[in-house]
Image (tube, rainbow, N blue to C red):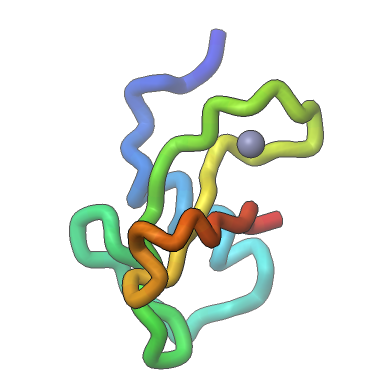
Length: 70
Ligand SMILES: [Zn+2]
């Protein structure tokens, strides 16, 4: 059973920490990493490599410039 009740913030914290990055913080659904703000959304794709999270630089909002945090 997938942990759907886990918040996005908790999931992102886990992924970013696992990547060895400790210079970040999370404000609601915004990840602030190295001074850049990223909007965090759940990813609904069916890529088995996908971790279920995708990020978009806040300044690019509306530009469709999503990328996956792997
Ligand atoms: Zn995905």
